[in-house]
Amino acid sequence: MTRDKLLAELRALEVKLRSPQVQLFFQAKDQETRARFVSLLNVISVTVNRLSNDQLVGIADQLTALDGDLKAGIANVKDAIKDLNDAIAVLNTISSILGIVGRVVGLVI
Amino acid sequence: MRTHTRKIITLVIILAIISIGFGCGKSQKEYANLAQAGTLYAAAIDNLLIATQKISIDTNSERLLQDDALANRTLADYNGISDEDKKLIKTIQQLRQHVALLSRYFGLLYELATSDAPKRAQDAIGDNSKGLIAEINNVSTQLQGSGLIPANFAAAAGPIGNFVVAGIIRKELRNELDLRKDTIQKELLLQEKLLEVLSTRITHDLTITQEARELRLVIKPLIDVSPISNPEGWSTARRTVLTLQLTADELGIASTNVKKLREAFEDLASGKLTLARVNALITDFQTLLTIAEKLKG
Image 1 (cartoon, rainbow over the protein chains, first blue to last red):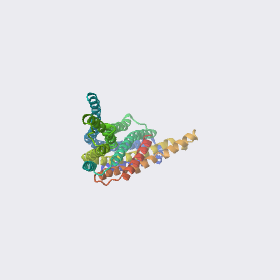
Image 2 (image 1 turned 90 degrees about the horizontal axis):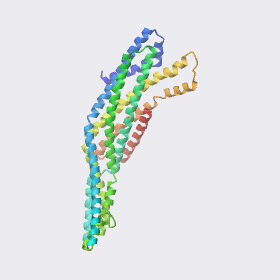
Image 3 (image 1 turned 45 degrees about the horizontal axis):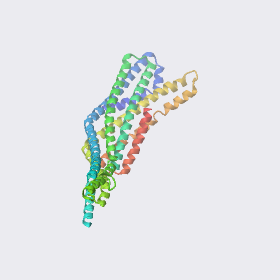
Image 4 (image 1 turned 180 degrees about the vertical axis):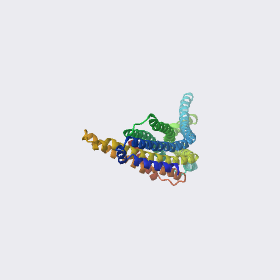
């Protein structure tokens, strides 16, 4: 049985054991029976938690392995935006310089 | 004069061809909307991660309370459950850091795709009355008595600049997505799995919480020999408990949409993606975001 299948079965079992019907049934039993039932239920709940967390940890580790590529993509797109802004800034600067040159030439000629 | 005009027309055609080559047919709007869909997805998954953490911890509290009602609990019992909560908090933090990167990536793609650089380039190049062209002509007129750039070219230069810069942007977007296509595919396959795992986990946790609260807040006060002391409060609690799972059901339906995002990126690369599909994705992820926000409460 795979871990995913085991988790699915334990979850289904936990839902049954935590249902109001089953809980009320055990509430009417003696203390020792109730303690044994709760111990079993606790093992199931902890195992459900553990397997659920393992699933997430597995995915989180695989996603984190892609962080480097995403960071490279972020840097690449940032550079593209900066290059575009720089190119337009250069055009504006040339325009301003030519404006000054024009005024100087006008004064000299 | 006719030769001169022909040269200008030829230049405009060459620039247009270059620009179309840069963009490879896809409009900036498609890239922008796809990046917006990605950003919305990242926001939805981030909210869902917060919701998972909250629901999971609350469910474990309900488990502990339910067990304690039947038999006294020990510190070891408590730690067994709490240690798993702490592990979950750590993993959720790790996942949220990754989702923040994903969100930043899609956000920058959107910024590039919706850049006003083409318009700014057009303004910077200008025409006979403003911008670079006007200044060149002004200097030229002062030096040699006439403008260097003819009027008809000056009128076309700004719009050509706009067109070429838009083409450069499309080329940058296409190149980036080509470069990152394997990573994006892996990322979205893992996101499909993540969403499925979160959806199943939330559904289970809410089922357990619903059962425990129904017993604790609704059934036990009702079957107790004394009448319910606060009927209004009891009625509200009953409604809240019974509708607890509705949002989880919606999540189950909405969580299949991440597959559509992966397919959209694949189709973008092969040129099969349409704007209508991208817009439908945006709507889907807005729905997912709303559900995730509701679950986060």
